[in-house]
Structures are given as C-alpha cells and as structure tokens.
Length: 527
Image 1 (cartoon, one colour):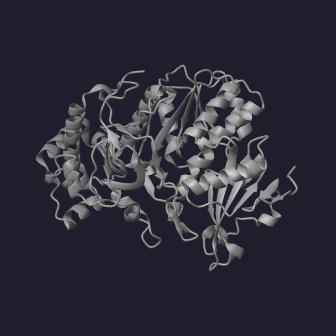
Image 2 (tube, rainbow, N blue to C red; image 1 turned 60 degrees about the vertical axis):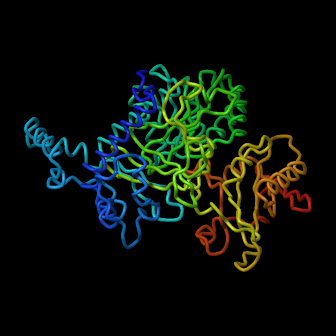
C-alpha cells in the first residue's frame, strides 16, 4: 500500500504546512461560508486575518456539544455549521475570485455547478448517539467522503493491511462513524469485505460462519462484541487461524480485555494477532488508530497517530481552558481542517487524555505523525454518567469499565443505579450484574470485586447479582441493540425508569445473589 507523504515529514515541516492551511481555510472558507462561525467571529470582533498559527486559535471561543445540539424548537441549529457557498462571499477575496472565474471558464456553467455541488452539497449524514439530548447530525459532502476514504486507507496502512486481506465489518449498522469509516476504508483500498451490520442485523451465528468460511483475516467491531464473538468461536472450536488483525472502536480497550481477547485468539488458531485500538468521535469526522507494531508490543503503546492535514488537536487544562505543554494530561479539543460539510473550530470533546499529544517519531513504526495518548476517558460516550453522586460521594462511573471489562474472572457485566425501594428521596443503590467465568467461586469473586471497587472507585456496590452468560447478554442487548446497555440509571424520574426497562431483582432468573454481608441465595437458572 502506498505510503502517506505526511507520515515522514519532520514535525517542523508538517506543522508549518498545517498552519498555512489553517490560515487560508479560516480566511477563505470558514469565515465567509459558515453561518455559525461568521456570527461568532463578528460577535467577538475577531478578524479572520489574525488567525495565522495554531496558537492564534486561542482567540476563538470554544464550541461545545450544547452549542451545536438541536433543540425541539430549533432543530436547524447543527446545519449552521455547514459551509454554504454564496457567489458574493466566495468572491470576496481577489485570489478566490480569480480561481473561481478560471474554473467557470474551464468547465463551463454546468461543469462549474457540478464542481460546486461535489465540494459543498451535503450527501451523507452521521449522528451523535444522543443519550441525553436530540441526536446531532454531522454532514459530509462528496469532497468530505473522499477525505473519509483517505483516512480509512491510512488506518489500514498503519495496520499493515493490503488487498489480499478479507474484512468482516461487525460494527452496528447505523449512521455512526465506525461502520461507515470501515466501509469507505475497504472501498478505498479495494479490499474484499462483508459489512454485516453486527449481531442485530446479520446475527452472531452467521458472522461466526462468515469469519470461518471466508477465511477472514481482519475483524472490525466494538471491543465488547469482538470479545463476545471470540468467546463463542473458542467455545465452539471454530478455526479462525487466518484472523490476524482486530480493529476495535466505539469504546475504550482496557488492557485486561485485550489480554483476554489475545488468549481467545490463540484458542481459535490465530498466530501473532494484532489487537488495534482506535479513537474517534462523530464530530471529528474520522477515527485514529495506533500502528500495528505498537499493538503487537508488550510495552506501553505508542498512541493514536493523527492526520495533521485533516485536523488540529489541542490539549487544554479542563479547568482553566488554557493549552498545556506537550505530553501533559488534559482535555481533547478538535478543529476541522479543510472539511466542507459540518465544520468545527475548537470543539471541546470532554474527553480526557493521559499523556496528551507528542510530536516525536513513533518508537515502533518511525512515523513522524503527531500522536495522542492511548489512555482516554471517554466522557463523550457516557456524558450523563461522567460524575454521579452516590451515597454522598462524587463517582466517575466510567472508571468501572476498565476494572470490570479487564477482570479475568468477569465474562460480562452491567451496572445499575437505583433508589432504595424506588423512593426518590431514599438512599442511592448500586447494583452490579455479573456473569462469572466458568468454575469461579462466587464468594471469592464477590469479595474480590467489593475490595477492588472500594479501593479504585471508593464506592462498593450495594448488591452483586450473578447471572448465567446468556441471561446477562440478553440484559445487555449485545446481539439485539446497536449499542449494549452497559450502564442503567433506574432512579425515579429518569427515562429508563419511566419506560420500565428494568426487572425487579426478586423476579430475576439468576444463578445466585450475593449481598454485602456475604449471604448466598440460590435461585432458578434459565434454560
């Protein structure tokens, strides 16, 4: 596969080119054609000409999710981010006016109109998940889709894949980034692929059969679903010896969960497989990944390799909003570079990254691309659970994910927040549902989890409920929903409580219940 030019430029060169692109982009496209940012610049008395470097971006106020989310009475808000070509505004600068007059002379009126449609007419939509608000659309033009294909091609290049590989795309079929970036990446490379739509569309059984019969070499999926597929494949003794690469997205990949997947890959015959983590968010238009050499290493990973011609990433102190030094922890802030549909400047993701961003060459693959730290707290995925007060203690529920998904004796888990006796004025309760590994003592696991969570999160669960694996998979909706129901807020007044999506514990067909005092209650198991 052809190498990307940006990969091997010295940082001084690509940073200089990046700043040149940024200045022209804001001056000639964003300010004239973006209704949202033109109003923002004018309101704050910012002249587009003063943005000449990445440091000058600090003159622009942050954009947040709340700024761009649609409201019931104003559903059109997200569309203000889309560049709107207007002849008068396009020709407001002499250099731009000359270029467009030359295009009209070269292609004629009809050809010029088609060129403008290709560049500026939105033809493809993605949506944010919309857990607490209306889903926000992010729009792509044909120009943007070409860039999405290129970004996907680069991720496959980082993974050292080529046209001889066969891809099974098991991301959920939805207007979300993961499924479609995989689709366009395989198209860009010319790689054979089966886009299954995940368990809800094709079904887990057929996906497993496809992996085996097509001798697939690459699987793309969420970490939870990939783990589920490998667990079934190992249990059924399937031959997946050709499978050498997993590209995982949509959720974080805890080290413990990666180790469990590598163990399962060994059981199905895979030799030296690479389990590659990616990071992305809908508003960022593309995802980023670590390189294959980093994924194979037992040492600390190299980080997500960014694309300096497609975006600018800043790391800020989430409290002060000021940019931090290279390599320091902070919040990820995203700026679009050379996109045409939905455009964002200084978008606060809410995601916190350990190790920030670095520009030194990758110690594994040698690329000089900027790299983002691998350890990212995905508050953009579970924003309503970012900080929740339980029993008077402020708790980050996202911290449960690596602790439980990476635990060697936990197959699956689900966390519920409730009120005692469903009384909105009573105490908070945390109910942890667990499918234990085969042969594990429940009394041991109960004690282990209580001590682990009390130490790491400072809040132990009120109850631990043990389930068989099929039962917990049903509760999670891993095969029936686009995204598993990992966290549930079942306190009175929440949408999930009002929709009566929970089942009382006393009616749960579980294998056993263990409470804080260690009592064991044996209940009927499901068939």
